[in-house]
Image (cartoon, rainbow, N blue to C red):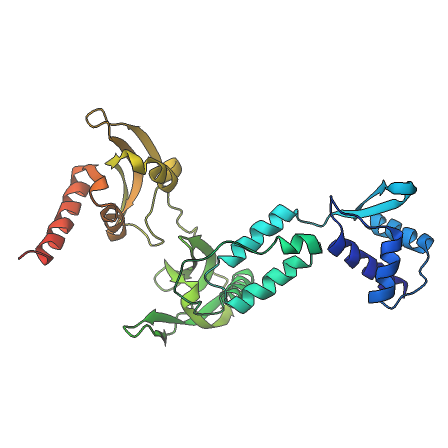
Length: 323
C-alpha cells in the first residue's frame, strides 16, 4: 500500500505541477481520495512520501504559500517542456510513421507533462506530403539495430514501385553483413558489406520487409567509406574533385547549408548579382541532376572536364525537345 501511495503521489505531481504550478498537501489528499481510493492520508504521511521521492533523486521544490501553506512542485522530469514539444513536433512531421504510431508515441510524452502543458502540446506543424508510410519503419530499425549489435548477416525482401503506384517486393539470397544506419535527405539507409565481392551496398530501410537474421559473422569488416566532400545522394560518387560554380546571389544561404564545411564562397567581380562557390564535390549523375535543378541560377565554371560532361548532358536533353 505504501509503494502504491507513493506512485500515485508521484504521478499526480507529474501531471499537475511544473515551475509555475504547485499543489498543497490538501490537494494531494483530495487526489488520493478521489482517484486512488486512499482516504484519510495524513499530511505528515504525504510529507514523508515526498521526502522519500526527493531522496530517490526527484527534484521536488517546496515554497511557502498563503498562511504558511507548503506548495510542492516537481521540477525536473527528465526533459524540459520545450524539449518535449520539439520531440512531439518531430514525431508529427515524420512521414514514415502512421497516424496511430504518432498518437501512441505522443501519448507517452504527454505522461511527462502537466495537464496545462498537454493543452499547449498539440502540434501546429503540418506535413505537406501525399505519400503514406509504406512499412513499419520503427520495427525495421529495431530489427536492423539488433542484427548489427549481434554481428549477424541479414536477408530481406526489397521493394520498388511500379506504374500503378504499387510496391513490388523481390527476394534473393544476400547474406550480407549490416554495418550502420545512415539518415540522409529525409530517408533512412542501411549500409551493408558484401563478403563475396568485399563491397559496400546501400538500401532504403523503408523499402525492406521480412528482415531475417542469418549466421554470425566473424569476418573483420573494413572501415566504411566516409565521404570527404559534398555528395548529392547516398550512393558512392565516381570521384571527388574541386568544382567552381557561378551562383545567383539569392542562393547563397542555400549553398552555405548544402556544402557546409566543404565549400568556400567569394564575390564574383564580373557579375555583382552572383557569387563564386568552390567546393570538394562527388561527381556522378546525381550531382549533375542537382545542378540541373537550379536551372540558369547555377553554372559550372571549372574544372573543364566536369563542365564539358554537363554540357553533353544538356545537349542530350535539348535534343529530346528539339523540333
